[in-house]
Length: 175
Image (cartoon, rainbow, N blue to C red; front, side):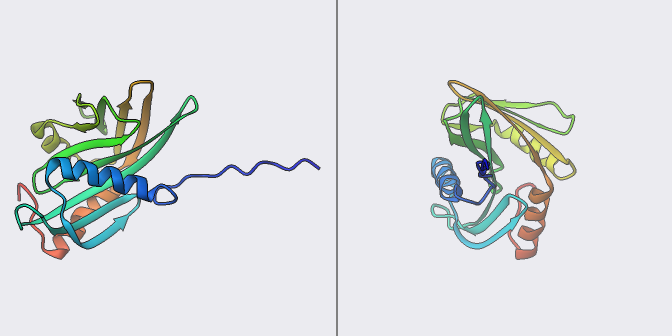
């Protein structure tokens, strides 16, 4: 009797949690916005963390959603990171992104073109963050040196994270 090979399904938060945490730390260190997490919350794949910023001493929050994709045999592990105090939005991962395009529902896409830490322009980021308040689907294309990885994410966990931040009493930029 032939045995079928079990296919291991990789879920966010499984064996790659440390990889995503490392990506997030690298990005936030580059942005200078890494809070010492006092509160943590997770909804769907989205992770919300709030605490006191190391440089400013101000209360800061980040929301991160990790995702993995396979494209023609090559694996990509990425994270979309939102630094709420500054309004910065970025994609970080491995292989290193060279460019990324992000679209919420049918709205126009925004693009970043920075290698390694693909940071979106602040004005574009704020527009997308406004769209995430009511949007449902996030389409994200990450371009590396060899492949393009395409992901579809839900915004539900982002909104739950925002609600939790409000419940904790942390300030949100623009409110």
